[in-house]
Image 1 (cartoon, rainbow, N blue to C red):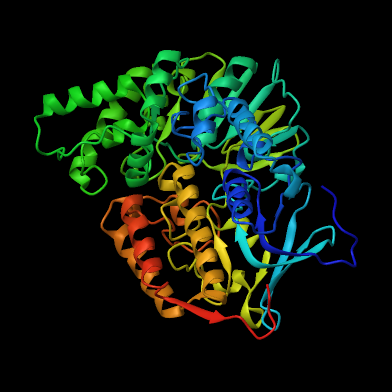
Image 2 (image 1 turned 120 degrees about the horizontal axis):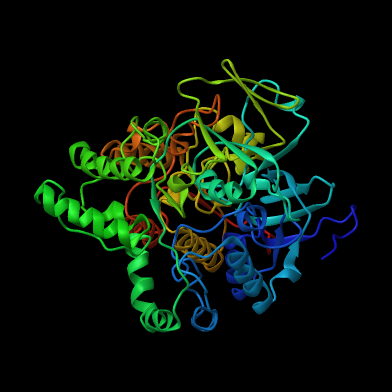
Length: 543
């Protein structure tokens, strides 16, 4: 769609920023309520992170039958998935199908990056402006900007001098990238690096992997999705969806402690789950994320698998995580990652032992070693949970900048709102389960809560809702206390913002099961939105 002339500032009930899974569901839901909606999206089309993440090997680590919307029965039955873990092109096709099926694109402004959103106290409206200068106002502003959508390049001296090709996994070109005959360096071995490295190794003449931190990875055991298995799962969709709203992602959960069973039984269980594939292995026992001794048993099992798979002992040792419990950083799911280091054309450089000195025009210097390269792939992750939000100049009451308010770390109430910013809602932001669950389950819950809140405000003649500082302080303490009861704080992870130089170290997701969190949110809503400052409409305000 096209913008109105610059002089016009059209008004909407809801403006949503982002057209990924969250933005599309918010658009569809708000429209079904009879609200006027506009969505701003920086990309050329829908998809969010799946529009940008086109690197080789990109796929979801949640099984495809779960990584989908549940709000429409016909939609979930008619779409046919082809693999156990869907690859990026298939996920993007699904999102495009949803946009087409519900005619969502007509309310989306593409190629429109929002640069500023300011709250007008006199008008009780948000004023939104894009980088091209187009403006609009709204009563309710919804940030669907994504938890993992702000790529970051590594801060390495000389990066700007490199004369070869530089790519970031989170901003991959749309045209095909051919590494045939090339000497390629990959910096980073988190989730995207672990997915991309086996694919690039098959094509490149030489691949050098620059590993900053060894991560635990488990095999996906991906395979084509058999039609009979899909039909059986879909026949029980309502049951599975209900369970997902309690646990986030449906796995095979155990009610036993790892300490309760014999060493032999425990090893058999880990092996069974390893062969089954996926993150399901982390749920083999119910105390793996709470008890260090229990966690040590699964961590050592995965370490033994690395030593078993990787033939060179020195390489295997470098690939073996030793500095954090398994699961306290995102557990990666791979297809042949460790096996890739047995290839003759692949070399691992352990930056813990010898850091990168600098990048030069034709390669990378590591200590005394020079690595000649034609291309660099930066699999260095994102400014998670807050990066995309703070990239926009968001200003609340009295011109308070969100960047300034969150200078010492994000502060929210329920992970949905932040004090000083009326009618500003955040989907799957800090202070919510967010990245610790199947994110679509988290998205659907937040969209439902926001929609019910807006409906309640309108029915009761209220104009604004805003988190109080006291409620926000209590929630931040609650989220921190929940994290401290687990092993998560033992890792220097992006959950804490540790991958961004200068970013405050605050554990950002809420570790409670999403069912617990949903009930907390619902109880607050049922009690008349306790912890929120709610104000009535001003005389003559019809919007």
